[in-house]
Image (cartoon, rainbow, N blue to C red; front, side, top):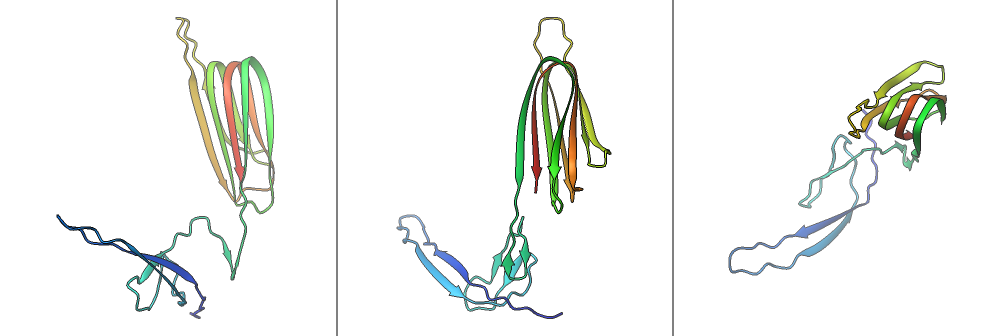
Length: 185
């Protein structure tokens, strides 16, 4: 395995903490800053350094970091939120969502709060294949009580196919508030 050395400039702030016991004052804290270069040994959960300093490892969090060679890459998230209010509506509505080539992930969240009626929600990929669906049936309580029935679908599509994804809503005498949230990255 060929070792690649990366010159790291690491700012380490060390706080020396004073000791305290009953009847004694706490010593003020002191801030020391060290700059040093170290070879990168591994990127599992930490870098290990061979130095004379008291800190011998530095945990590294790599969540949502993309590195290409020695330069930084960019990552963009696009989130779209829509609200729909239905008042005793029947019919259907389609909402297209464009997913570009090379997108890493496509997230869809549909949150429905129904007072009455029946609502069907379907998700289709660009080839027309149904990739998710759910139905919410509102309360038919005739006793005078007002009830809201909620339904949520959250779908995650890693490496989604490019093209126009379709959300389809079919309503039958629906009184509801619908929140649609999509995210493409």
